[in-house]
Image 1 (cartoon, rainbow, N blue to C red):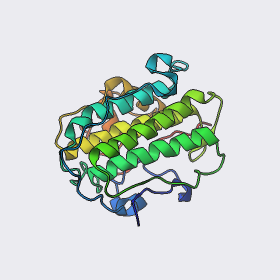
Image 2: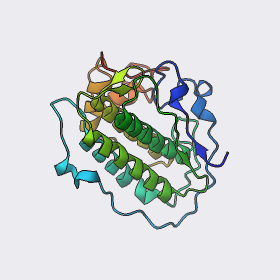
Image 3: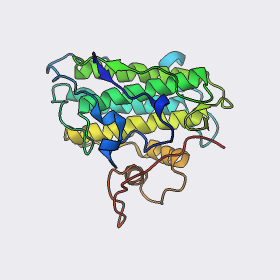
Image 4: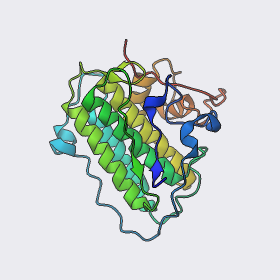
Length: 256
């Protein structure tokens, strides 16, 4: 295998716990990704986060109807990832990403993979499966290169969402609207940034407003509470008050 291969979602039959092998790492086909060779420290940081995308900036984005998630939210999530991780280029990204079985490098590649997969779905609007392509990241990719790939894939998703009509539908275990793909892109980005910062021992907390939007769209029956803590609990990443961490979970992106 020449690169960091990412799982082909088109082969799955049911909507699994999204983006997260924590409940049963051995059951998740992405858990056996090859590790990226150790990153070379001292690389030049990437350019300052550019959240503009094709329309030139968040101010040019379509903000959608109240309660919907849009390209603007994806821009904000990717910018937050870059803000948190760009100062960590000299760290060892071969350590495990929090409680995941993946390294921090593999987790960053996974973020990019899913952002690109969602972009393809929104652009092509397939009705019955994921498009039959996958992202590969070279095993020699350094942390700054990984972040550049995430940034590129984030902009591809953002651009696809900005061009989409709210009435468009594409397959994600059922017909899913652009808002659902935006919510999943934000969730993948924030949750796995959390995993990476846990692995790199960085004190970081996802933005409250984005977490609240993700909960509203993907976890409408989640309990009340601090949106950050509720989202982490809803995805098996920790307890919530007297509630034990979840051992399995699934989000609902498809619309009826």
